[in-house]
Length: 213
Ligand code: CO
Image (tube, rainbow, N blue to C red; front, top):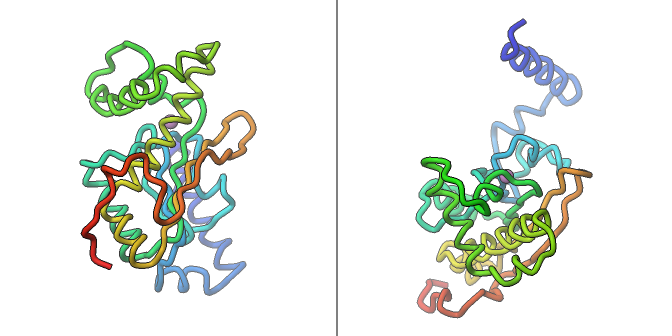
């Protein structure tokens, strides 16, 4: 059997097993999507959101890209964010990075990787913002790890800086923002930062004062 056919075969087995265990499983899911969580994570194949959090289809709305970035001009991310916050009314937004992230590794080097340079440029900006703290780390591995963590924290702030989230904070006192890092060595997620509705924000210049209530 060709490798890709294994995926289709496994899918059939999975669908059969789900219906056997719970005949209403798909009927329930097809009628309503009400996830409480939006996950913004790295595209890395080793960090699958549902598996590592023990959640099922229907529980997490997911957006993934290289190095879990929240870029304020990224229409894809903004569309996911707006839908999750305004229509699905998620209660929590999680930005999850992971150690040994290839995107962050690329950013901390001086190599050119072609087109993707323009994406990981955003991580170089995080490096510049926190250069002192990162350079104080004694080893290369620890410098990379600290940039991975600071990148997650900055992306959480980028979520908070959107009018989409600030409007929801005013209207329904949610969502709650979280920054996590997944450890590939032991499979454990370590929380780094929490931002409840209303802030704190990294700087008051990002606060909008004329949003509808
Ligand atoms: Co990654």
